[in-house]
Length: 132
Image (cartoon, rainbow, N blue to C red):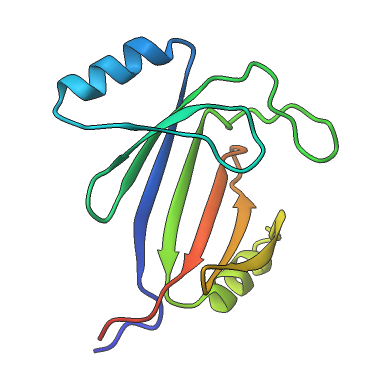
């Protein structure tokens, strides 16, 4: 039986007050991190490619706020999921009253969107080709 919507975890973001200790801990487990900085942000973080999953370590920001300038409680972590149908996934979430918080966009031929889960975590969704 063919699944209508396959989902897999694509990345995890850990926010920490002590980036050096956290980086050392995960490095001691055998993970190799590279330093990254996206776009015009001056926020340096570290990423480790674990095959089909990327683990990123970011410095913890005491003040994480949403577009209404309200503090986001669950924003210490972020999850990224690969889905086979972004449209279907966003439709299913909309039925629960959850709308895309960051508009859907295309980057490197991938369709992407972000939503906020009930605990305030940012969840990134990336559409991938289905695999039979």
